[in-house]
Amino acid sequence: MKLITDRPDFYNDICDVIRLFLPRASIALIDGSTGETVDRSGVFGDERLIMSEDGELTASCVSDGERFIANAVYAADGSEHRCTYSSPYRGGSELIEKRYAKRAVKVAVFRAMHKAFAERTVPWGSLTGIRPTRLLRELIDTEGRSEALRLMTEEFDVTPEKLELADRIVSAQRPIIDSASTKDFDVYVGIPFCRTRCLYCSFASQLRTKKTDMSAYLNALMTDISMGAALAADAGLNSRAFYIGGGTPTILTADELDRLLSHICRCYDTNGKEFTVEAGRPDTITKEKLLVLKRCGVDRVSVNPQTMCDKTLRLVGRDHTAQDLVDCYEMVKGMGFASVNCDVIAGLPNETEDDMRLTLEAIKALEPECLTVHTLAVKRSSRLHEHLDEYDMPDGDTVERMVALGADAASSMGMIPYYMYRQKYMTGNFENVGYAKPESICIYNIDMMEDGLSIIAHGAGAMTKRVFFEAGRIDRVANPKDIDTYIAKIEATNAQRRELFGC
Image (tube, rainbow, N blue to C red):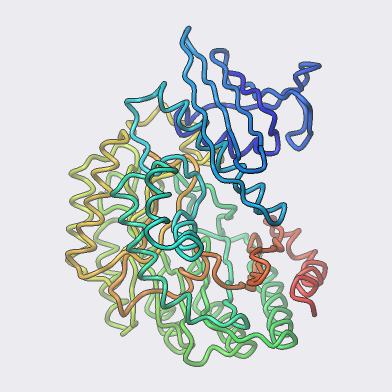
């Protein structure tokens, strides 16, 4: 398939819409005048995205000063499917103008292709971003509630069910978002190591073996944390929430955890603040480690089964059983943590709707405070993607029912949906949803997922971001993903962070 467009700067966004209908499409950018493959950032008068051997889509956008007018034509198998879409021109900054032009193009492309794939359910319509709740909240703030809801359904083609979910989440998040000061920030610390690599994993994590030099990483991480805390003090920032993620943070020994968490508490003001550790895998959790977490003020932990079916656990590369998780969970609850979260994944290979139901019934018996229902995303860097044809993958309709089972289970435990995000290559174009009992909502998850607060991030692959509230923009500084590179560039990365925060 060829895509010919006068807006090559929308390359990625148009491709994201196309992949709603052709999820495994392979895309290359071609210079229409020479036929040569070029860098995707290049700009030519006539550009073509070669996706497969069949079909062609043409997309264009013009402005008459009053409207953006986008045209899309999708031609395949001797048929043409057309859409012209117009939206009001919004004057102002170049950024705002580009945003509305891009929306117009995406809607036109979506509707043209949906005519060709009319049988396909696309619950989030033309929205391809990872934060539909952020869009809805911004629309409510700028357009009013009734107009925002109309735009989501009539302009962006979001289904009523997904709009209701997004609306409930926005309502749950509003008090947390509104309570933040422009001087508040969150702290993230990453431990990019695991015991084994799961079949579906695409994270830049390393396996910890007996030969792993963890001391080198921890020494660098503690230096990183000291620098970040000094930056926060110089910028006059106030810490709001702390999150230790991974990888698997509890891959560290009890002594290593003690050393790291004690250092965080010395550097930052953690007293009385929300403090989460993503313990995750039960085969890494011990009573000794839990005692360290409690002593250092951690009040929230995760114990994540993903599934309670032993056959699937073995298939995806987990070293534990469902009973191991139950035993671990009971140990964690016995330690008196204020909140425990469990993650599950809808759409795992070879799983059925009955498997999902079994998993959720087992979790309901545990009575956690939080439940996160993920939809499997088949990432290109995962082993699952490399061997996808070897597995019996649940179809979109089955995954939809699995996701609904997750929502019902959360509701039966007294939980409400409070954050959501979407990823590329998700089965059925669904979403990941975090549920919690109202008193157990995680502040960090909302701040991070909604880009509502600046975050100072430590560790290989971690992303520091500063929210410029008045300008309506977010700038970022990324730590190198490679461990050795991260260690070698700590000084340089910290200099970039200080420049980002103006100190």
